[in-house]
Structure formats: C-alpha cells, structure tokens
Length: 338
Image 1 (cartoon, helix red, strand yellow):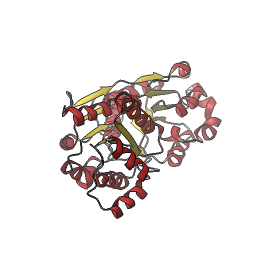
Image 2 (image 1 turned 180 degrees about the horizontal axis):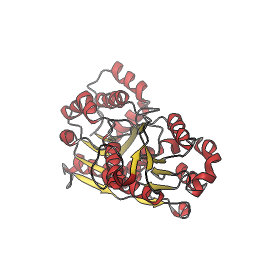
Image 3 (image 1 turned 90 degrees about the vertical axis):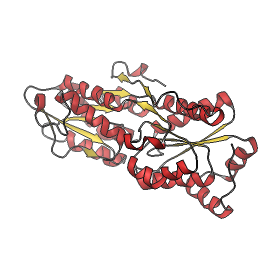
Image 4 (image 1 turned 60 degrees about the vertical axis):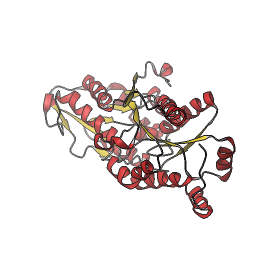
C-alpha cells in the first residue's frame, strides 16, 4: 500500500509544511510501495517516544518495505495539536498509526473516527484509549500502568516516616489514561485499597497542592520539584513519568540538593529510565527510577500493524503488556534496557 493521491497538491503541500514530511519522503514511499507507519507521541521532543520510533525502524529493517515516520506535538502534551497532526497524515493516506494517547475522548471525537472511516489501522502504545473507546484501535502495546503505579508506590514505602508521611505525585495531563492509571496504582499501593486521594490511610497523605500537572513542560516540572525540595520538610516526590528529569538542566538545577537526596531527607522517585535520567540517578539526584521498554513498544506495535496490513491478520491479543525494571544508584551502570 502506497500513498494515495486523492488529496489535492495544494493540501498535500500544506500538510507537508505542518508536519515536516518532505516530498522526497512521499516519492520514496510511492516508488518502493512501502507501508508508511506513523509513530505519534504525546510530545515529539521526548527520548521515550524517539525510542519507540527506533523500535519501528528496527522492525522495518527486517522486512524492508516499511517507512517509519515520527511526529507529535513539539513541546508539550497538547491534545489539539496531537489530533491535528494525526489528521494531516490521514490526508496523506498513510497506512498505519502507532499512537500514545493524551486524551482518549477528545482524540476519538476529533480525529480517530476519521481514521477508522479511512480504514487506517491504529495500535496504541504507552497510553491506551479508554475502555469505551477501544473500538478505534486494534490492540495496545505497553506497560500495565496500574501495576506500574503500584510498583512506584511500593518504592515510597521504604521512606515512610513514623506517623503521617506526605507525598506529592507529579503527572502530565489530567485526562491522560496511562498516567491516571499510574496515580491510581500509587494510591492503592500506599492505602491498601482504591482511594481517590490519600487522606491518612496507613499514615499517608497527599501534599495539598498535588498532584502537580506539568503538561509535559520540562521547565515547569523542574520548578514544581524545586518547590517540594525547598519545603521545610520536603514531602516524598513521586513522578509518574520522566517530566523534570527529561529537562537538560535537571542536574544543574537539582545538584545542590544532592546531600539531602542521598541521605533520604529528600526523596525523588521517578518513572522511566532514559539515558538522561540515569545520569541524574548516578549523580545521586534521584533515589530510584523504574524503567519501561519504549523501544520494544515501537518494534512490536509495528510488527502487529505489518501483519494486519500484509496478511489481514488481527492481533491475537487485545493487550500486549511489557515488563518494567528497577534502577538505583548502585546498579545504574548496568541499567540500560531495550
């Protein structure tokens, strides 16, 4: 399946300008009858989603007739921008999407209904659609996000103080399915039951200003962390994705707190274990990171799309869970997993 030419040259030129896909890319795909698969992250300037794109390209090397394309909102988790980018690729006639969902309801109503009408298959990765919206994708490839949240919450238990202990959870967008599942998991791990907010269960409470929502804005994420570190008695800080640690100036901004973090006086627990995060962990500017497998999400998601597009083979499972792993300052040099 190659690019269709029903769209006018004018619209195609406009769409190319929006997404940065060149005419050379289109001609190359058409000439070689490649399948054009687009990896759409919540944000584009994010090494997590870049790894998923690398996973797409890795599978493409094994079959030779896939052209992987990478895109997403440039700077932060913008639900409208994500939908517009997907829409621009419908107009180009791409063959399949790998999408990390920022807002399920908005995405379905704004663009995924169009994707389905165009008969373009979707695999979600990292962040699935809500249960009510699953008809708009073939399968999900990624972490069991509730279990992942439980794992993050369990790490906080090691830093529990006598009496009441406060925790601050940092998230991205307040409608994002995978992040909300992780928050639920954190609370469940600490409360021992499902709660909408920690209010003293097992001695755990949530800091009044939290959860913090960053929208994936790195500068804002770092400032939120600094606010917690500057409290007279810092609360445990638990990020359900990389956020602050994805900032290129994280180490410079947080290094003055190294002694407190190393001693456990200040506690930073973070999801993800990207290279930039492992540098911070090795510098004792994080207490523990729990890594995921974005590369494999992209590789397997592409394989499932390829099987559907070339063999009309539906995924055998609705969900393909990937495992996660634990990184500490002690094992940081061996903690690189694809």
